[in-house]
Amino acid sequence: MPTNKRRTAGGKSTKSKNGFARKAERLRAEIEELQDSLFNINEKDPYLRHLNLKSLRDEVLRSFVISLHLAMEDLLHAILFDFLAKQNRRLTKKETIRIVNDMRSAELIHWCGRLKLISPLQYSNLLELNRIRNTCAHQWILDWVQIKRVGPRGRRKQIKIAVVRYKDQNLFSHNIFAEEFYPVYSRLYLKLLFRVWKLQGKL
Image 1 (cartoon, rainbow, N blue to C red):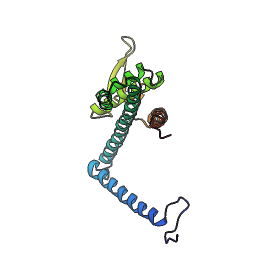
Image 2: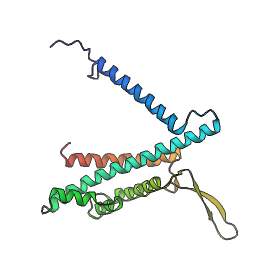
Image 3: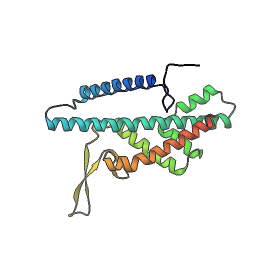
Image 4: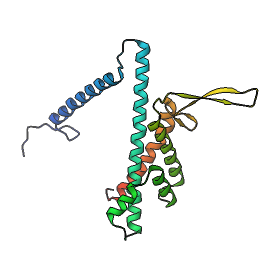
């Protein structure tokens, strides 16, 4: 059937791609406007601009941690629901959903661990993510540091300890977040996601 829409190699028409390109630029402009409005990232004073950009960076990382935790929680809900539905057919679907959804995050992780629905390493990593999420959710200023005295009496020294830590290091330092935290939890997320898709017949 003839058509006046020229197709590109990706299968989308040029008109469709141009439409998405315009939408993407509008979204980019909206995001930049929000960033400037909420964080004043274009402040003329360089010192204040530096502080504002630092605040924006912390909020981006905080948001990522909280969103990642919510995503993992949803996947654990699905895994535990599937297990309970198969093991106890006396429960209705509605009852099973309520039992699973009423669990707090730590309870959900503990039960998945006890029932061996996740590996010991996944269990440990999920508990660590839950701890980090709690810090991000309840600590307003994330770049605040604690001062701790260490060493024998008479030769003690003060060290700075970051509020949000991973492997005893500042999670929000670029190297720790990008090279230590993100690779571990991106792999964990994908493993749980593919497992849920398999349970749901999507794979």
